[in-house]
Length: 329
Ligand code: TXA
Ligand code: MG
Image 1 (tube, protein in one colour):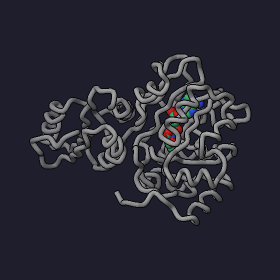
Image 2 (spheres, helix red, strand yellow):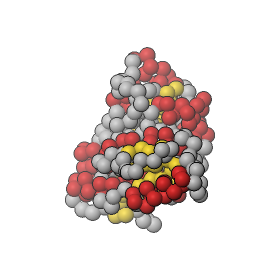
Image 3 (cartoon, rainbow, N blue to C red):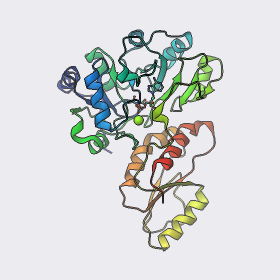
Image 4 (tube, rainbow, N blue to C red):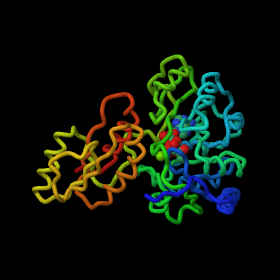
């Protein structure tokens, strides 16, 4: 990965704003993953996002804002719990689902009566939002169902000419998508785990979050199959992983491994990535690691299961979906 300052020059920013104003698509870095942005108030522009990603049109998008004051234009009501979470975690990797304002176009909400809002902390995302002056609708900048993009290069590889302009801010700091909390109903619920843990949110709220249930708004992006590599991916305990990697290699298969340690014995011919034992550091590299292993030309990717502790919840979530979305071995 190349190091690049989390900054762009003013002509790059001007160009990006121009593209957004003329109804085009701009990919931009956020602290979580790269977003594929369009003017959220411009239905034709938002429609291009779905076409570029190959995403079904009823999957709602997150509207990104420069600051929390902007939320009033998109949500009909901001409950006290939402105010408290925004105060504590915005700008940052938290998305709040609220009752939508009437003026919001159905193309953004997927026809639901709720809206997802986020104020990102990444300096480039923030500068873009400030300069643009409106809401930017943006899903993760990957092809539908595939691994999210955490570098500008990932975006270009996935979406190529479908994006009008890419702002390059280097690798994303968090590396996995924002935590999503639904505050549109009577009981706040966790819709997607992320770097901001359920514990941290509950501490601010002063009560427990509900699990996403039947009463929660539909979050179609949370389908079981997601973040999927094109190589079969299998999750297993470390000792089983070593055994299987060894026997597959002996039988002449090329095997890729994502484990949390450099396990012994080191076998020749295995593409082995030793990831961190620290959940945020593991998450930071997760998608780049999966992409690297996916393009290594192996017949399977064996991934060591994440530990059961709460701190690993977001990583476990992404790994489980990646398995469900990958082709059968
Ligand atoms: O970190 C992130 O959240 C990144 C960056 C770019 O901000 N964005 C992102 O967007 O991950 P996307 O579209 O890939 O995932 C958004 C998720 C989807 O699962 C979608 O279904 C859900 O949010 N969502 C959006 N609007 C919603 C709504 N009104 N109600 C419930 N879920 C919603
Ligand atoms: Mg996504």
